[in-house]
Length: 239
Image (tube, rainbow, N blue to C red; front, side):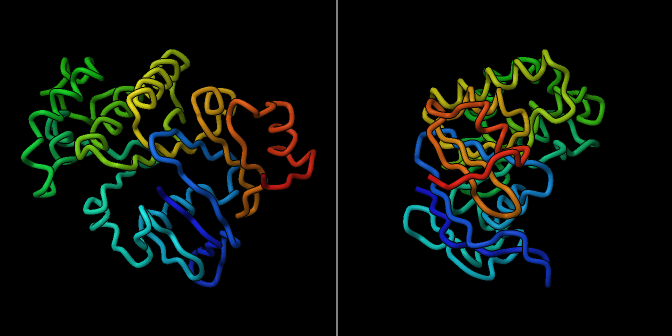
């Protein structure tokens, strides 16, 4: 479905991604793992048109995404839940959710998707009139995820959702990710909690220095080997 082929991208004269290739299968959860500075967030930004691709192609269902402005990504049914929640603090929970269906083509189904969000995240229903800035970190992460789902995207990209959350909220978060996966949602998850990420994923990519050093079905991943590559104790070859 989503294909990244030989992509180079970065910031001005500083290149971060080096001839990077990976495939995102439809209806599956693909996790991308790597230490800080590996290029994970840069890859997501390139997918979403936040930074230009200097070489290579990014295609969705065979159609090129290169050069598509970020504000038009909703037209190809891609949504990203960024690192750090980034909710609208001075708006209510419900107003934040409705912003996820702001584009004209999504407004007709906004009420239905709002109810789905409240079913999946019942705590948000309880706080629907509450200002988003008063939510806990876990509640704000739920709100960010629910807002991303309001457009019912074909591809959902999630960047570091467990960052800074208490263990009980991490458990709840990954239970929701599993539910979304079981529903056939196509997801790309960037996460540093390797054990939890591999446990919920269908396919795993490990990145180092802007390159993929491991590509493997999650069911075949050895955490010992993965951690050896992660901490650069071993050398890796892309499968």
